[in-house]
Image (cartoon, rainbow, N blue to C red; front, side, top):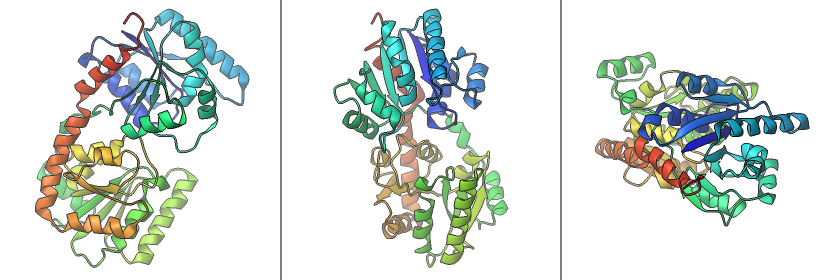
Length: 376
């Protein structure tokens, strides 16, 4: 089966990690031959090429410049005529709007791949809703698919496929000496219970609410918080300064470590005890949670979006959104109970394998695509 992936993003997040995983682990399902049509040169472009995967640049497409839209559609048609795919996957709304109709005119089945729920209908979503429906919609969580059906395509066949595991379990194997060295570097006592959060400086990731919850626990001894993630853009720098001011005003400066941007995030997770992220908006399928579970960490997060699909009571606790007191209660319950943390951490490792085992998820993708692919 020849699969043509179309992507118009410029950043590097869950979508890009997933696509690189498909390329790197393609031997797990040799029945699929992947080709990528991308609008922008980016980090993922180089990673795909390093995996020996064909990548075609179909050109930058900007809605404000109609000529670029016509040019990229023309480039897509040439690519499809040359590659002759059995199925075309449009990853998110913009590629579907750009190429979906052209693919159909060529007699190609089109799959709309949702990597996260819709929060508000943007221009591309509205255009999609008015246009022809895809042959299949795939979402990374039940919540994502449910929102897609409610807001876009109520009658389209759908499937839920959680992200495959992008990393080997050995990624989180660090010896005691390495973990102790990291704690020394961050002025963290050997016996401290470390609550870690490792995400980009985006307000909806819930840094403020988590810090507010930890402030309510300042009389609980023995915990330290590692906030991993750096600020690069001006609004991120301003946001980070606000978080530091919040910590100072709460009187927990001695308990919080602003680590900044790091390339060794797996080492931080392997050296911590609890993962917490107080999301204020829903996400599709959190790779942050996947990483934390792979490292054997129990999770405390907010009950929004797909969190309840991933974080079951045996691996973590959920609290209401924007409820610092309930988040604090959940954290305290795990911080103060070592045996419970160990049980939850072990269960988390087992659950992430159940949800995300790489070969299983990639073969599921092949099975779902076979429902609509040419010649199936």
